Length: 444
Image 1 (cartoon, one colour):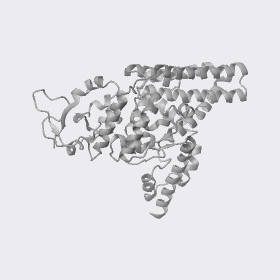
Image 2 (cartoon, helix red, strand yellow; image 1 turned 90 degrees about the horizontal axis):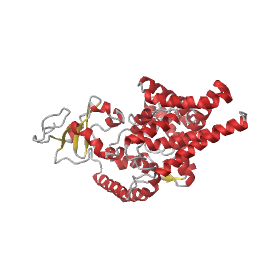
Image 3 (cartoon, one colour; image 1 turned 180 degrees about the horizontal axis):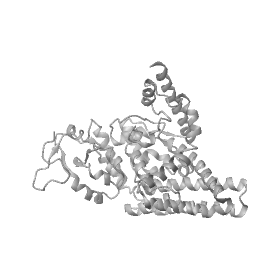
Image 4 (tube, helix red, strand yellow; image 1 turned 60 degrees about the vertical axis):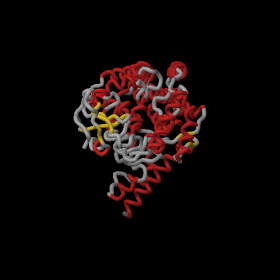
């Protein structure tokens, strides 16, 4: 039990002593209807407020019963503004004899990582170059213009159509990386400005939903590669991932699909179908069911612009097929880039590790080059991006040596690969997981 009074929401009176709690007590409050968390040794009851959390209630709920200090620092730019909302939620603090970290997490790694973050702040690595992001937006608009000009000048024959589809798929992929920057609040100091531009890019340039992306993607960052917390590893029984899940499925004789062949059928249903089928359906249904009319209006503006531009050349049915072919091409690009950094890493149930170790265990890098940076939207620096989500991507290469040094100090593996090998590793890891499933299915 906690050593003190009020356990409801709301700050205690100033003259009353601050209630203190043990980790044992705090960890009991990790339910959907009862959520406490710790930031800088202060205990907050977020049960009722979590539904109003701008990043979604799931992402903050994933830290119920835990220390969330490093996640809090990672996701928020304007800490003074955010702390205004936290004051009414304060219910106490950790008891003096309690360690700052729960469940025996490595306090030395945490201390060293926070010193690293402070060094990055002193080096102004969280300050963005606005010209860099303006040029990225400009090159997307240029690609869109080139695509229209090809069809306008050369006509709607097969060759101009295919070339135009590749140009538009490129603009869509690049717009995807750019909306990612604004969604992470890594461009402007003020969150509101990032949100406005984010809605424009993901809505008007891509036809998707900013809120859908935020609620999904922030969960991935908070608990990467953790079953039941990271939606990116929720494969709906289509794939088995990591080492524990295949064995678990095998022992239970679960065979929704022939998982020993998943490295083969992945090529048929993963890259080709994720965006044009699964994401597109999920985005539209989410906006409608949640009555997210602002995001829906932005998305409608994209589709209106696309069909006004291309229906005169292809007709309505032809424009629909053309759009889905573009989505088909973009989907390949998106899947290979996003999965080469994560799918090949540790995927398991919650291990309760410190922020630095958990992010390093779930991410790896791809070698830097001008092409790799552009092709992946600097997600070839996935490690640095996960450690510092609000850092502008053009500074990842500057903080990388500091991250490597900290990894070397604590014996944590820092993985960096060539681009082609990183992509081929996706197939290798799926094949390995499939073999683990088959062995458990037949022999355990």
